[in-house]
Amino acid sequence: MNRPWGAYRPDRWQKLLVNLCRHTSLGRGRARRFVRDRLVSSHLDTVDFEFPFAKFRLSLTGNACEWKLLLNSGYNRKESQFIRDELLKQPQGVRVFVDIGANVGMHTLAVHEYCDRILAIEPLDEAREKLEFNVSVNNAYDRITIIPFAISSNNEILRDLAVISMISADPI
Image (cartoon, rainbow, N blue to C red):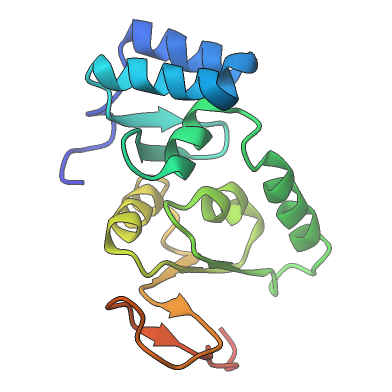
């Protein structure tokens, strides 16, 4: 994550392929995987891409959510719209969103302009590092707090992850 935003910008051919995938049926199913493999073989395993709502640094070789977000313009769109709609029903000043399993920040950054405060909870180091980078390049740290834990109904350690059973009910 050391390299500055834009260091992994796709070339014209790669950008054309990404946009073709995003705006046609190539962004779904086996076709999406085929396109992803072609992009990776063209040395685009990490990509800096700007969406209408936020900038992201994404990996095409690991986390499936990242390459699905890049290659399918409808990926999680309904969920993000639902969250925005629910937030806008709340009075300004109390719009709080808790993103449990924030991953690289897909929902966090899709709704950050509608929130007064966001708690982005992500226990996995690799995903959290990308989340921190993505929040940083979008200048969104004023509203977003990243919490390096997992949430569970059990108070125990799972696969070396610190698991907490409750978040304080104190005002944010």
